[in-house]
Length: 102
Image 1 (tube, rainbow, N blue to C red):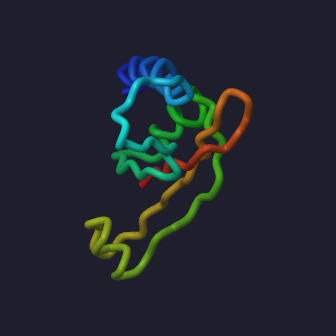
Image 2 (image 1 turned 90 degrees about the vertical axis):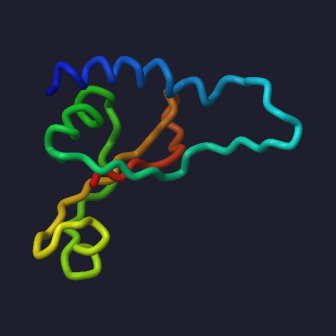
C-alpha cells in the first residue's frame, strides 16, 4: 500500500505548490485557499505514513469520536472513530489550512 501511495505523494508535492502560482481566471470568478478538507481513509496509521512521515505535514490534533451522533455521520454504528488533523503549510511555514483524516 505504501508503494502505491508514494506515487500519489510525488503527485501531491508537484500539485500543492501550484496554488501559489498566478493563473488566468474568469473576471467574475474568485479563488481562495483550502482552509479545511476531510479525507475518509481505510487505515489512519497507514495514511499518517504518507501525510506526516512522507509529506511532512505536522499533526495538529488527534481525537476519538464516539457516540450515536458521530456513528451516524461516519457510518460506524457502535464504534469509536480515531481521527487526526494535520496542518497544511507553505514551504515557508505559513499555515494555510488543515486536512482531517477520518
